[in-house]
Amino acid sequence: MAAAQIAAPTVNSLPSSVSKVTFGGALRSEFTKIRSVRSTYWALLVMIVLTAGLGAVASYTTTRSHQGPFFDPASWSLGGLVLSQLVIGALGALVITSEYSTGMIRTSLTALPQRGLLVAAKVAVFAAVAFVTGLISSFASFVIGQAIMSSHHTNTTLSHPGVLRAVIGGALFLTVCGLLALGIGLLIRHTAGALTAVAGLLLLGNLLPHSWQDHVNKWLPTVAGAQIWTAVHPPHSNSASPLGTGGLMFAPWTGFAVFCGYAAIALAAGLILFRERDA
Image 1 (spheres, rainbow, N blue to C red):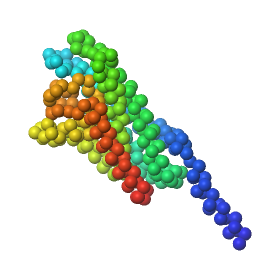
Image 2: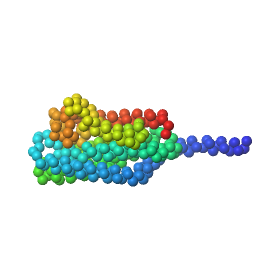
Image 3: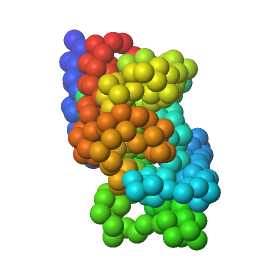
Image 4: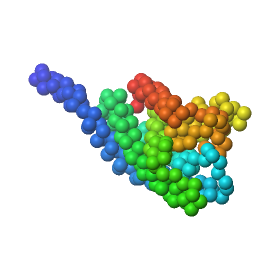
């Protein structure tokens, strides 16, 4: 009887210790996880190099031909985002799927059973890392691209209308790409499947028939989101865009809102299933 009376408080003490976990503690835990994985640094480094490198190549190609009145030097210098979105998308998916593949998710849930709090901490930490790295990528790409175009006097500056918004928009675009991928990772839970789904969704615009572009393109996730990193918006189809898309596009913040909507839906659906399914 005495043993039973001693054991009871021990069992009851577990929930009270777990309940002391705060959002700040969850943030520190998630930040420790993401910075302790070597692949995080490699992925972010590749993203920076790819954005700046391809942006430089895209900027150089514009100097080889005459540019029309709706030429957008800012978006051309940020052209590397078209491929670097895949890198941040892969990292976003791996933030959650790697925990399932290694079994770490069970340890995470033991330490923090509040699944909503766990996901919120992952989203916040990843968004901060992606945005800061995205800013470095975008500004580096812009500076290099404008230096290349300055030799032909086709460059622009941050003081021109829409240019600063476009450069910062590049970081916002990459951040939401990663969050969309994180939501898909929550839904699928398997690394290979999540990476395939992310790549397919981000590159969907290149897979559709050309005849669909005028009506469908602007609603596609990355096409809508990419309007945030364009500074010049012609009143008609812009075939000279580094995106290679046709059809009338959304205004910058409208398109970005559509893109954020896709990410929010993916994260919300992933969270619902995460709460209902076993680890």
